[in-house]
Amino acid sequence: MNHRELVQSGRKKAKFHFLRLPEALQDEIMEGLDDGSHTLESARDLLAERGYRLSHEAIAAYHRAVRRERRLLDARTELARTVEEFAGGDLSRSVEGLTHMLVATAAQRIADGEVGIRDVDLAKVMSVLATITKAGASRERTEASETRGEQPDSSPRQLDAETLRKIREEVYGIL
Image (tube, rainbow, N blue to C red; front, side, top):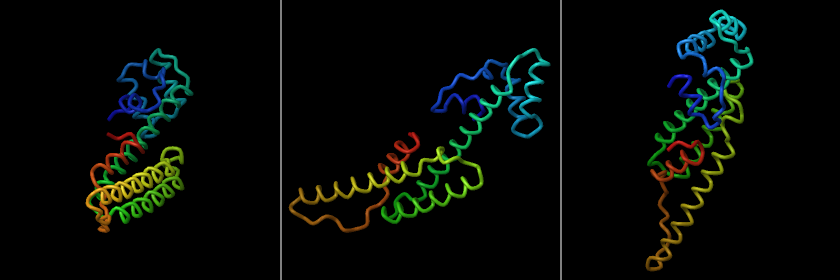
């Protein structure tokens, strides 16, 4: 996904003056900023040489938005891959393992400066997992009591496709 698609797919639909530039020039500037061959000031100067006026603040805002969307895309992709790995396992162990992994990964990435605490809302992840777990347990008790007075199934619950879908949708908006 290129920088334009990333920014336009983001939750925040800001209007960037940078996107009014020709696409080839946008790409050249972004590649230069990404690989370090351009600074914000040199990017501004390059635009001025080619007849475009754009402040380095406008370039910086767009570059920050692209970097943020890249981090979020990476986080969503990694979360989806990880959740898939836990599919079919014991639900309580899966939830516990996912929680520990998310906390450890987030702490490491925050410490490394790769991710801000607002990019990954751990409280929301854990809240959704707890809600799904409680709802599933309550549903099992209700279903068991309605069918011939049997006791609820005490076998370990599993992280099923519906639970995975809810986690993706409610936490990160992944469909």
